[in-house]
Amino acid sequence: MVGFDPEGPDLIVEAENLSYLDQLPEQTFTVVYLDPPFNTGRVQSRSTSTTTRVAPGDGDRTGFGGHSYQTVKGALSSYDDAFTDYWEFLEPRLRQAWRLLADDGTLYLHLDYREVHYAKVMLDVIFGRDHFLNEIIWAYDYGGRARRRWPSKHDTILVYVKNPRTYWFDSTEVDREPYMAPGLVTPEKRERGKLPTDVWWHTIVSPTGKEKTGYPTQKPVGLLRRMVAASSRPGDWVLDFFAGSGTLGAAAEQLGRRYLLVDQNPQAIEIMRSRLPQALVTTPPR
Image (cartoon, rainbow, N blue to C red; front, side, top):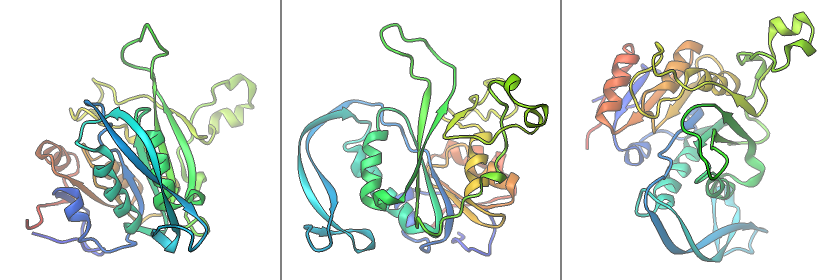
């Protein structure tokens, strides 16, 4: 059983993430990438209350950074839910992401259209609205074609920073992409490629490609490379506690970053063990 050591090896940890995260030292990770379950199950209905940030001393509770928040009673809401309460599941994990991010760190939260608007409000509460950096759209083209609505062909990645004044960001380190209209730019620009914007056109993992691990929700390495390259430096630690197939680790390894990957699914652990053989695999005491 090996605990986390910032001077130690890259780690793959088989554990329930919330109980394990509480053991980690705060402000350790420069990038936290989360690709949680997308919440596509049964419908739940409940009476809700939300919180909104107010002037110091005017709220009924104090949140992160000493900010004041006022509870606002909401109407009955209904939404898809794969858990008894999806947001009671996700909120404490997002609060752990805040705690574990370094002062210059960045959170990338990867969701689809079902939940991203709820997550934006929740992250505004946890991080603060002025800590919001970007909404990234990952656009792809695969799967079925809906006949009674526009087909859904994108995911959303919400980007929040720990400190709006000190966060690390260097887009020049990111892999460039082809111009969509190459005939409108010079040959030199065509050869160099362009820096990505907040809309990322990137293919999925090919079902027959070398990158495919067999994990059902695997994301392409190219997608994660952009986040890691722009928001961390060589030697920095990055964290994914819904690690799945370990794509963050693969991207970190390519770019010379350190990584900690956490998942409780034995299938995910075995895939990561095979994909990242140099990492230490451990199960913490229960």
